[in-house]
Amino acid sequence: MQIEDYALLSDCRTAALVSKEGSIDWLCLPRLDSASVFGALLGTENSGCWSLRPADAAAVPTRRYDGDTFTLITRWETPTGVAEVRDWMPVIDSDEDRTDVVRQIRGVSGTVEFRQEVRLRFDYARALPWAHQTGVSGAPELATVAGPDAVVLRGGALRAHGHAHSGSVTVGAGEEAALTLTWHPSFRPAPAALDLAAAAALTRDWWHDWAARIDHHGHHGGHRHRDGIVRRSLLILRALTNRDTGGIAAAATTSLPEDFGGERNWDYRYVWLRDAALTLDALLEHGFTDAAGHWRDWLVRAVAGDPADVQIMYGLAGERDLVERTVPSLPGYEGSTPVRVGNGASDQYQADVIGEVLVTLAAARTVGLIESQRSWAVERALLGYAESQLDRPDNGLWEIRGEPQMFTHSRVMMWAAFDRGVEAVEQFGFHGPVERWRVARDRLRAEIDAHGVRNGYFVQHYGTDEVDASLLVIPQVGYCLPDDPRMLATVARIEQTLMHDGLLMRYRTTTGVDGLKGAEHPFLACSFWLVEQYAATGRIDEAQALMDRLCGFANDVGMLSEEYDPAAGRQVGNTPQAFSHLALVRAADALAAQRAQVR
Image 1: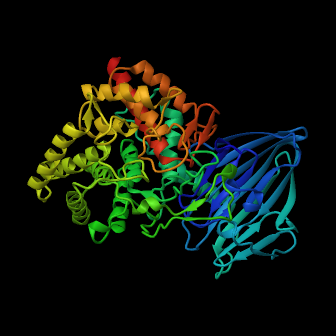
Image 2: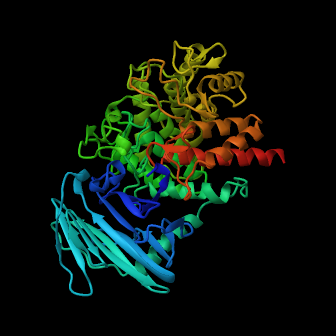
């Protein structure tokens, strides 16, 4: 299966990926960053999967989401009849420690026989569970257990063959059948079966109530992207946000490759401060101030203690131990190894991160989020840490695994951090060493203007003539105007050296700073940044054409991964990628605003 062949199910605690052929090939339980139970996405069917599709090989599927939800409706047309499968994960408040996946079959016309096959493989396919039948006649149940995890399957009779279980269900017009999977801790009894009608109503209402709060006021609604993929992108950003902790994951998957068959395979199921802050920025622009408050509380908990110990990323509840390791039990997507769990970049110093966090929290203050003494104390501590690291080179936005550099984007984001600190004191009345922050801000500007610009354009890092797509962010944080001559020259240089088939690479991997073998594909967020830059400088038609092309890369249910291979015409990297979707939302807002100005 190609990456774009998958659709997302979410309960805002974990997520499942369902293929067009009706197989759940990725599911980690009970949390997004837990070990997989279904891991076929990164291996074979023996890595774990749950297939449900018509027995007739000629069946043709089409799919869509049920409105503003993550209930996936797959319609199967067969020679004998038509039926629909509704796949969803309940979003319900419960005192029980449980996670559920529901697969409901409904006959539309004629009769359709469905076959299901379940291969449960706990702990990234390293643990084959014990399984035994526990249900009574008429209400079959299959209970499985491996170490701390247990899963019970209900609703369809299953028989064992080898290390898989299979069964069949036939529905006629108007008939329904429901299959459910329930995870629970193995040391506790299995939870009772769900009241599916009540759970479905609660889940649908939960998603629709959230989507109904999407604010288009002031964003020039009604353009061609507003009511479709932008709305779905905001929903995806919500799906990646843990509803208990407020932690925002960068993606739902690990180790989907940036280079097919190569080593650029990373675990993105964690909370990058940068990505989470930028996601919040997109949500703030659409009225979700409460999301900023929830994440700010997460931030206060996660970075508690000595600011010198701040990490660039954490677990979904603020865990610090994200040691990167390989998982040989999963052979990798299309043989791309190694499969990684954890992320070694958590130990890197990335100077831009504090800037992104403070820029977003400043935006939250502007729209009315009330600052607490505790949260302001954390912001002050982060600024103090940035001040102590003022002369330290870093690994940059792209988590370069070569030698640290003075990356221009990082230096600009440090400037933005001190700028927002000064603003908090001068405009909002908070207390802090504003004179020191002002000196640091002004010093950084003088340094960037002197060393971050060569030949009239901004450069990737001091001492090079290379450019980097992250430079497109410079006007977004107010360092200069989009039509500053240096920015226009930077855009021209980026177009000249980083454009690949009309899309932007992050940087040239052959320049020596990358530190990894192999190449990669155009990074979608970078091209969305270019849309924003084009729009802001009057290149409206070019911005619209690029925006249309980028949105065309989304799959049939509106999902984007991290990168895109224009030669093969396929998505690349982890999916759905928060960075891609938040950049899409920003670009759509910027394009709509500029079009409104010229009307």
